Image (tube, rainbow, N blue to C red; front, side, top):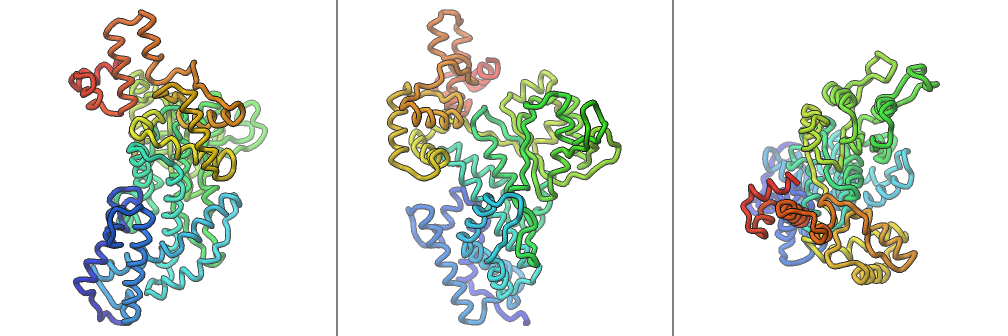
Length: 487
């Protein structure tokens, strides 16, 4: 089939709008605007805008098909790329229900990859549009990765600016800010991009790490009708703080029989168990000693490691995600966290917001969080029960309760309410802001500088910027920063 077609100017303008939507972060305001523009509507909710956009795109492709112009081989250059993007956008959204069902089925099935019964039809459609066999397989695998990324990131609910920003940042750390470049050149290169998650205990760093780790690219095996790996096997999490110093290296790198007293057999560490398309989550990375940091740094730089008691190097091809609730600036200043190790981990550094920050930005976020927690705890949606829980929390807790245990505390508060009917908060908690400011002031043990420092820290925890603290305290930004960092 020879090249003989060109898009009209009107078609080109429409397909440019499709490209803008296709390559926008799906959790961003830019994507919402692009969907509304395609649908020709304004002020509607996100789902209605997306439905309108996909309907308009499908009609355009149908019109081209009726004219015998819906084949990539008829075009070249920019027109071919615009048509390809539109076809991929349409086909991806056409199979969203099937991909969602596959993700749920795979979670239940575990490590054995599930059959993909709709793959033959999807691949045939892509080939009918002019994709090669190899291209069709690649795009189908890319669809699955995109949907897993959206599926798991979307579980991190919350309407606050901080949570919307978190969802956008997680999407970018998986697909980069330029999805088009990612799909062309970086889809098989992200293993060398490490991510460091920061945040207090209980904020959901593990869930954020899992969203990244379960959303890596996995090739599709057309012969078996399955993806090459299960994403449940692709993600391995290890909490480094739970192991004594003498065992951490064994858990990370494995050991050979007889390597030390008690090594009665060979043992595979997490680096050996990580599959080529997988990811390792190193939780509480701030707790590991400097010697372990040095060995981890070598693995990150060389992508090779040796089990304890062996001199034979093994390859590591996965991605590293690390997290800590400890203040890395202080650890680095004290020499307890190496700068070179930090710089090898920090391809992306993402702050997971506290619950108090979410509620300060969006007080109405609590009911939606409770509804999601109810599904996890009770096993089904129950809006009426979630409303009852919310109302009781409002009665039991003081105004502006700080939720020192974050989302983890909220989850246990729900359980306690289900058991006892009440939750009065944690009176013994120690938050990043120190002891309760009112209690400390009442004790008469603080001087003016300490009091101002604590107050600035509390405002910063609530509003998240030095500028806002400076505005509220009528201090300049540098003074505010000094008080907060010196507390």
